[in-house]
Amino acid sequence: MNSIIKIITFVCVALLLQSCIVITGSPEDCEVVEITVNKIYEGGEKDIVFAEDNGDFYYINRGLEQGYTLEGLRGYVLNKKATLHLANTLVGGSNHIAQIKVSDSIIFTEFTKQSTE
Image 1 (cartoon, helix red, strand yellow):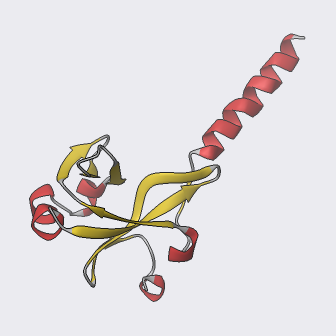
Image 2 (tube, helix red, strand yellow):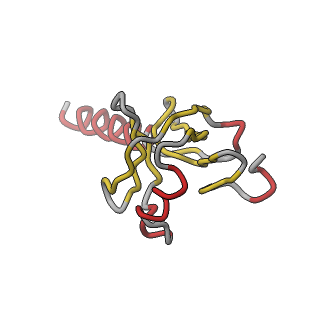
């Protein structure tokens, strides 16, 4: 009986970890949302968080480790409309930004250059 509980626990943990894997294959695989960025701040482990007035937020995972700065991004994005491509997980959507675009300028992308259209 004890080994059955261990197996069930292992399977549940494995499924939970799999559901957290972010999928950013191409723009077509993402949910696209348009937001007005009202606040930009650091969150999590060097994440860059973009927030709306209504409390919704989205983030670039470890964006501060990729050479982006909060001040630099504020100049491009703050109080402007931005189009976000949000990565999916195995169980659905997420707040993980795979690409952010303001007007016709791509500010950040995880996609290869061929698939940023």
